[in-house]
Image (tube, rainbow, N blue to C red; front, side, top):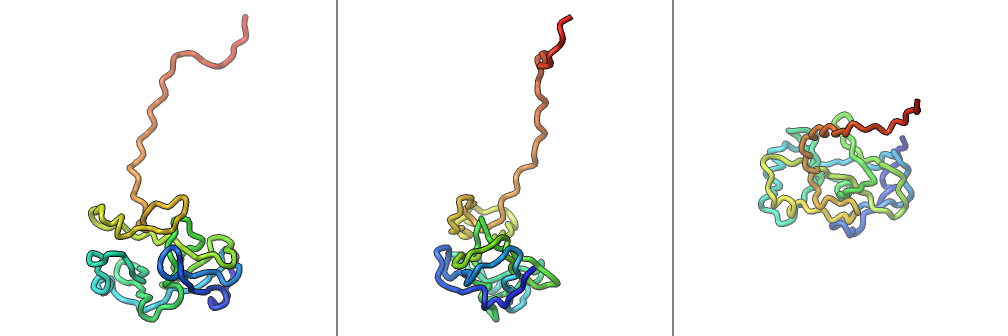
Length: 176
């Protein structure tokens, strides 16, 4: 694992995905720790108070949940990491280590590429179709699922029906 000061690796500028984005200032090798996601650590209750999804026309927060009760609000004391956009085909991943969040390169990233990771927002409570619009994805990836929400859980797989046989075989037998 390589670790360089993030100021050498990234630059913030306008993004075609959403608002501002973070771009590679130089080539970044796979598994490089790029930046720590920092900001004010607040309770989930405080996050709900600050960011009322139901009142928003477009979802926009700088929250990163540490656990059920705490999250980081990068709008307060955050750094460039808060501008890393979501993609359904990300080139970065977020890992938690000892209560801290770090962004790592999933693969080699070329100079000038926008850094992205999959937000995988949790679907909580009973599903509301309006969420698809509120949490719309604009990543443009060929595999885009259309939302920054976690993929819906697939129904439990049913066992495959047993294949009916006709009694014939394909095994060749020697003539007697």
